[in-house]
Length: 336
Image (cartoon, rainbow, N blue to C red; front, side):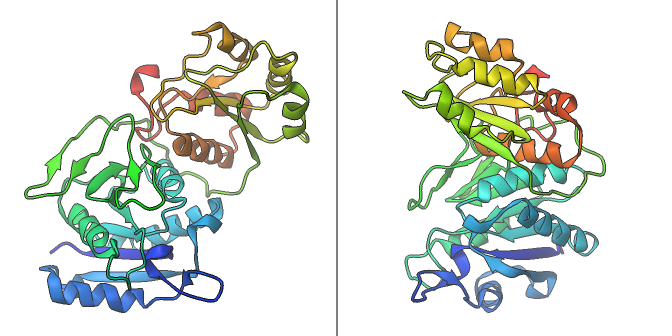
């Protein structure tokens, strides 16, 4: 029988009311094993569970939190066949993306889930999501790092959170879901191949400046946002990679930053997009500056990939080059 290990990191699923709002504190271990004993064919003795310390609201997650989960998964790698991670929804798409890059050599399925409501509430989606994650882990069809939420299974680096309240709180705008639960489940396998990464270094915190283009932004404000200089710049541009090219000096700021050897990556504010720098005149300045395209990656996947590459100590040139190469199926491989 398949053995499953569960890693509990915190998040809404195990929160309780406090004078300051919801905080971690529910008996998730007891709830989970009662659920398995009462309504599952899975032998509870084949399920192990670890709880990270401290439990956190996922709004407090950072790259060291990602690494703590990675370390826990490797700790139980040889004693389990599949893994379920219980995580808060706010930053789950960042965490799942980050883990896809770091775990290309893990060789066993890792399924994330969480809930919009705490498990103690009658209207909670916790039971449906957790049992769905277990079913995905037991299916024999899950691969790599995935997320089950709201009756859908998604590739971990192809998702974005689209709702703070709906039970179907995540979407995969470019590829669609890997599967939809039902009787039977409907699977939609698609190519998720990548180059992989041998023996990745641990995640660390890195200074990535995220710049959001908005109507009326000027060069003075943009310069202030990249002063002092960060380790990398991620620009959320319009459409296929456009910025206000008629705004005096705006493109000059980006060209100066790139000229100083700082990786500049351009993604789109659109959920469904393929960045094509220079397709319009408004994006030609970015293309000329040496900025690189995020192609069809989600914002969460791009950010996590930048932090991953910076954590590998590659240097600006190699970091920029690897942004255009699929490591774990995060982008359309036609661009490699």
